[in-house]
Image (cartoon, rainbow, N blue to C red):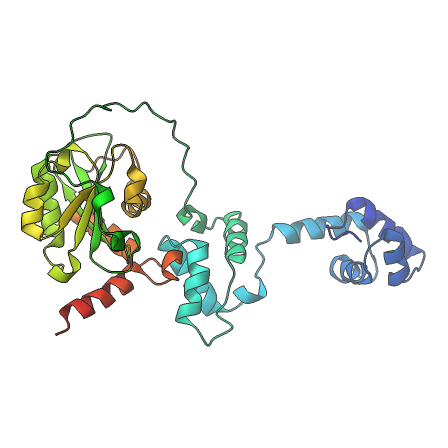
Length: 330
């Protein structure tokens, strides 16, 4: 039996069968449909008792109903709708919403919703002017593979290659291992400095006036000043010119610095992912000279309080606060 929507042709046949006084079960048998499908069609789309069932009218009613946003059973609860809408507007993905709600309401079965239902609800509501869909992340354009310039660039004297980094860092079994890089704009010299803790994905963010080593060091030292020494173990960087003052950085923070291999950004995958998430707040083409300190802090706060699937829907802030509690414990 078919499980698709009834067609206009099938509705015309139903109209004829009704005029013949045929039973629902016989109609269903002749159409190759289930009895419940025909019964539901007559109940939902029939006209008044005087006019009876008319195929054209039934088709219009069915089409209008399909276009209307469906309030699925799980979305009939006002508290659930409000909670989902609030998180969507905080730039959470439907998957993050569906996973996190189970942590916040572990005993309340009425506060449950699937990822697919959220997507259907958002796109249906968009037809009626709702703007929730604007907060969904969009797929990135696939960038063309570019030629690798500077293959023979001199590496910094005294740099330690990532291959010599302790194995425990790759396993993400402890707190205090960081990755850092600059997020650059296409206009102006200013940039954003992002420093991400590997285990918790907690992000420290600052704006720097230019891409020099002095600005990079000053911004990173300022970010890490409030972090306890127990949570400053290692720092993984790339080979950009702004990293040239890494010795000064090590002396000021106590971090042991390691460098990725040239043209291997995936070796700082945690930080690269954070940089991608930042583009939701600071898209390409924006000038970082125009953004305020509040905009930078708000973006970091939102990202740190957004649940992550890889953290079993805990937030980076929750996990990092656990580390801080342990670091300050006597």
